[in-house]
Length: 376
Image (cartoon, rainbow, N blue to C red):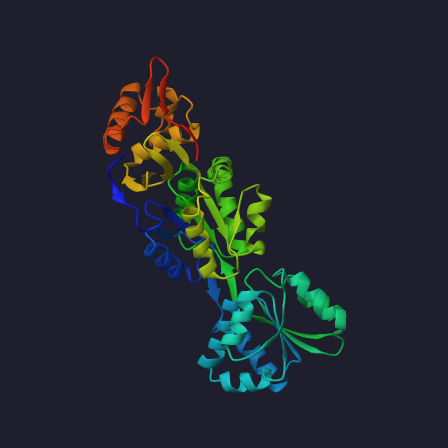
């Protein structure tokens, strides 16, 4: 048995990237409370339109001529609209104008924002798609009905055109739009870390953000490494819902969906992955082993490791008892292509960190392997 710090927080040793802008601070705080190290690397920024003259003009139009139907596509967008109305002294008038309208939500987050604003959602799309919203509304006919559609940052999704072609009087409300990543270098670093084993999980809350993250990974030349790590379970790619996951699915990446379309469920998704045994494990003579980017979990104790130590042990872990040569392990070190002597020194330090156990075996003239009994 090794000596180490007892694993109390379930995410100890995990580095988690939050590839989102909105409410990313809440996600980081929730993950760090559970022992993880999390940081924000938004793939896109949200550009609010609170002071946009068009937004206020459209709001006044709806106050003067109230809508029959209000379509809410995103929670953050609808809340932003209500906030803009407050800032411009129009909140009370807007509430009266919307009080008799039928509310249609594109998903659970939109539904929650409707309730938070004091309204009741008459229908919620299960698939969280604008296509389902369009099918629902056109099934009963929309000719002659005034419909306000709050759009998300990616655009109208064809709803305006569809409903207008069926005779509806459509008023478009765009509360925010997607902008470039706040820090492109940080975004680039996040995809490189995900491919190199320096991140354990990446969290996504929007389809446009997920799509930009994938494009960044392709440009950085690490998409194949990310694909392999995600397929092995060593990298968790977690999405808040099926729409958000679509760009990841299309890129051939293994993705895990939160059980409900809420940010709290996204945190639970990460916690469950590491607490329930979904992450890869190996059974060794010294106990069950599970890799983290910041160290290793061995027989229930977390052992922090240096970057070099985690890289070497991660390579041996992925081999699952197979032998890795000194040359292969040298390529796994942070600088890559290290000499045989550098590998031997890294192995010696790694054994010392693990308490001098025999879990790392030397295979004469061949290299090193983990003493694996069987996959856990």
